[in-house]
Structures are given as C-alpha cells and as structure tokens.
Length: 491
Image 1 (cartoon, one colour):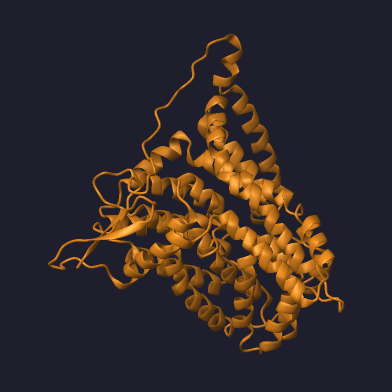
Image 2 (cartoon, rainbow, N blue to C red; image 1 turned 90 degrees about the vertical axis):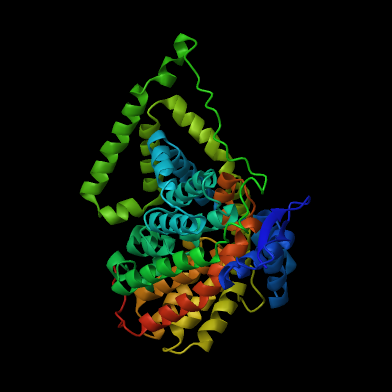
C-alpha cells in the first residue's frame, strides 16, 4: 500500500493510507529517509539547543578527565570570543553570497535552471549536482545559490517536489566535497606559510595545492563522492505520493511583490545612481589586479578576506544601484543569525577541549588524539585519523579552526609513520565534512533561506551519511597506499 505525506495539527509529518492496489511504493532509500525524517521532525532539537548540548558534553568530559571546574569555566568563558573575526568572515560569506545569488542576473539564471528538471526526483538530483559543483569553488556562494534554486524549484506547480529533500540536496556541497575544493580552509592554510603558526610550519612545512586538492587521488575521490551523493539524493527522494511540499510545511514561497522605491528628494539621487558602485568596483579591481600579478593567484583567491571583498564588489556590480544592493543585504542578514550566536559557543567548546587541563597537563583533545594515534599502524593510519577527524568535527564544526587545533599532533604522527603529508591534509578535509551531514550547524544559513528547521533536512542527510561514512573512509585508506612519504619542505 502506498502512502502519502501530510502534516498534522502539530506540524509533524504523517503518512496517509492510499492506493489499496499497492501499485506505487517507495524504494528502500526513500523509505529510510521518510522514516528517519518522521523521527527527527518529532525529536530533533533546534540547532541552538544542539550547540548547548555540545557545550555540556565537552564540559562534563573535561571534568571526568580531571580538569578542575574553575579551569573548565575559565576556558569556556575566555575562549568564547576567540572566533569573533572568523565569525564575521563567515557571516560575510553568507551575506555576499546571498547578495550575488539574489542579484537580477543570478535570479534569472536560477529561474532558468529551476525549469530544467522534468520530475520531482530529477529535480532533487539536479539541485544536488549544482550544490556539489558550486561548493568546489566557494562553499558560501554554493550554499546560498543551491538554496535559492531549491526555493525556485519548490515554487513550480507542474511537478511535485519534496521540499525537505530539495533542501537537503542544496546542503550536500557542505556535507560532501567542499573541503576538497579551492575554498578548503586546511589546504589554504598549509599552502600559505604566513597563515600558519611557526610551530606548525616546523612540523608540516609548506604543502602546495598540487600536494593536496590537486592530487589525482583527491580529484578522483571528489568525483566519486559527487556521483554517490547525487545518486543517493535521487533514490532517497520521495515520489509524488509521499512528497511534502513547501505549502504542506507552511512555508510561503510566493515571490514577494517588489516594493521598488523611487526617488522622492534630491538626496536620494546617489542611492539610485551606479556612479559610486562603479568607483568602489574600480578600487577593488585595481587591488585584485595587483594581488594576482604579484602573488600566487591560487593563494590570493583562497584567502577568505579576498573572497569576501571579491563577492562584495561583484554583488554591488550585479545589483548596479546602491539601493538595490542594500535591500539585498537587509534580506541576507537574517540568514546569519545562527552563525552570529552559535560560533562563540563552538569557540568555547574548542577552548574546553584544548585549554582545560588535568593535573598531568593533558587536555581533552590531546588525550582523544593520543588514543586514536596509539591504535593506528602505518597501514591503518588513514582510517584512524579519518575517524578521529570526523568525530572531533561533530563538536567543532570549523574546518580552519579545527585544523589549527588538530594539525600539530596529527601531522607529527604522519611524519612518524611516514605517511604522505598532503594526503593527511586531504584525509582531514574529506572526513571533516562527514559530521556536517548530521550536525545542523552549517545548515543555519540555508535554513534561513528555505524557511525550514534542521529536523526537516536531517532525515535525508542522514541517509547520505550512512553511505558517505564507509565510502569516504574506505577510499581514504585505499588511496593512502598509492602515495609515498616526502619530508616537510620548509619555506
């Protein structure tokens, strides 16, 4: 007997009994996603509550380890503000990505792309492909662009698309291969000696992109993950009978009628003139030209500040007039709320893991890593480090920040076991993305765009996690055997 998704008075998804002939049934992956979605939608807490739970777990673990309560409290409180600059950078990634993606030219492109799929399931796989491909260039833009594409597809009346599955597909770039692309925080840091602490440079040396994201093993890994993710997105997407639309979820996707302002006084003239936009764009273009001519283009474009400035200028140009640009920024800001409030809590967690020490001088992060490294051998090192990176990433969902914490002892172990240093970075990158599929933190900007909650997406991303976990860890272990060790190269 087939079943049709609907929403009860409490907002939970229920399944109505239909089609007594049993002629329409979901496949295994779709049933798994639907069943897990039902559980998550009922029991999964809000993302902020999840962050508070993570704080409690880290604090209790540190106390059990033997750290004094005062040390735990001090670590959390002082570390709470450590990621404020990074928080601002991440907020601007979302804002500038949103501004570019909502510009008139980008909106026209999104509308054209949204009209391509012919069925609900192909629409899900199409969104997944766009999300994965764009995340290799810039995870922030890819997340926003894919989210807006999911909204545009959700507005279509000619096909029935499960809006939850569409949102999960838009998220796959962050949960799949973003860290294997040029916006990889760990690869950027290792390629730029000016960004690395001196102690870490002594251990790892400088590792250029050709030894990390441009290794043929890394490119093949990214391609396999992309194909697997799109396939699972297609197979797990509910058919039309079980699809839950945005309307079913109470999400209004109707395009808002533009309240276009007009010039009412002489002082409004500059708001509607492209003159100042052109001036700013020329200044940024001149600076970028000099940076690209005098430095390594890959290193230049990999810097988050450069990314944000580039997308800021691009957004101003695409909107053309300051008034349109400012309206887009105002619409983007709500999507950053989760980042602004939760990043400090994750910084506090990182501080507990690394600063709260027992009487023996051990930190919780060091004890965890020491246990994993002691379990490994040269043949299992890639697998052990992959598991460790994925586990720690569940509590510290920050690619660059977590790498600074993890790299000293992981890369030191890599040297001791004579494991390829660049591949160790890629082990971290690929494994670090895995917990994103079940940790709602990086969903926050997307949820603000879609008008959904984390529990609406996690049922489908959990299915992806079940496939990604053995696939990614297995490939990391396999490819590690194809690479030889090279001693660190100092700058």
